[in-house]
Length: 95
Image 1 (cartoon, rainbow, N blue to C red):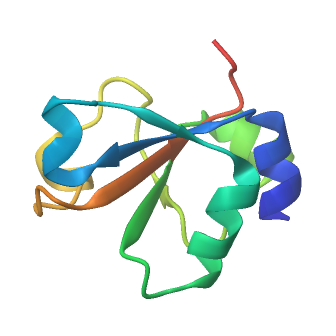
Image 2: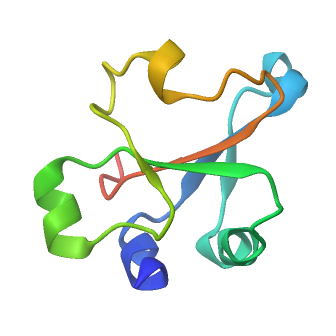
Image 3: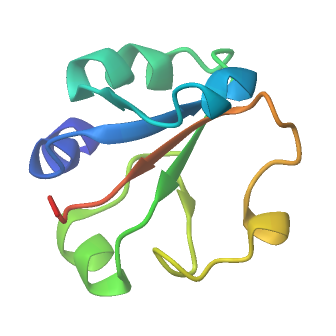
C-alpha cells in the first residue's frame, strides 16, 4: 500500500542530521525509501504531511506519523528532540 501511495508523491524530503545546515533538504526516491521502511532499525522518522481527505483516499505509509498540519505543526511536540534524527516528510502535492 505505501509504495502505491508514494508513487503519487513523486519524492520525499529528508533532513539529514547535523549536516542540515550545509545541505538542508535532500530528495529520496520511493525505491530508496522502501528498504529504509523495511529496516526498523534504520532510525528514519517518516511523517505524513497530507490532509485527512488525502489520507482517507490514498492511505498512509505503515508506521508514518501524522502531522497535524503540513505547515503549522508544533515542532517540539511532533518531531523528535534528537538533532541528528533522519526525517522524511511526504505528501501527495507535487508543489
